[in-house]
Amino acid sequence: MRRSFEQSCLQIYIKEAKKQNQEYFELKARELLSREKSDIVSQASANLLFQSLKMTREEILAKYPHFVPSSQKEEQVADEESQSEESETPEEENKEKGYPVKTVPPPA
Image 1 (tube, helix red, strand yellow):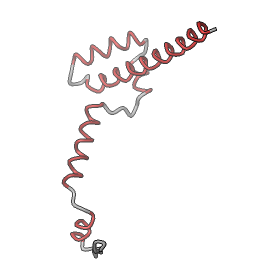
Image 2 (tube, helix red, strand yellow; image 1 turned 120 degrees about the vertical axis):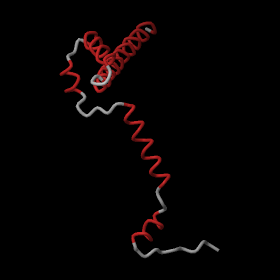
Image 3 (cartoon, helix red, strand yellow; image 1 turned 135 degrees about the horizontal axis):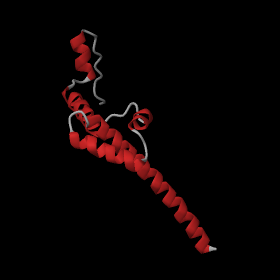
Image 4 (tube, helix red, strand yellow; image 1 turned 60 degrees about the vertical axis):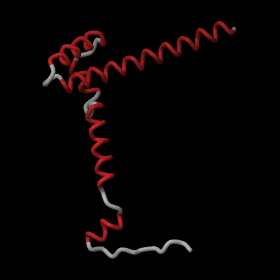
């Protein structure tokens, strides 16, 4: 009984790992496609992944049409962080725009 339960759990885990690997390599192929114009190695690597995934370039592009490479995501996050550090407080922004600023005295 225990052995059959372990075998069924193992099969479930194997299936899940294969699914995750498939998705990872599809995304990696998509990332390589986004860099292929400037990097010949990326193009060659993507072609090898297409062969091992048994998918075409068009299938990958159709499956992930709005893909943003992780390097661009990191740049976007860094830009947002630097903008938030440079931005003023809401009160300062309102004052600059000419809006009345309501100040609240600290609790006594």
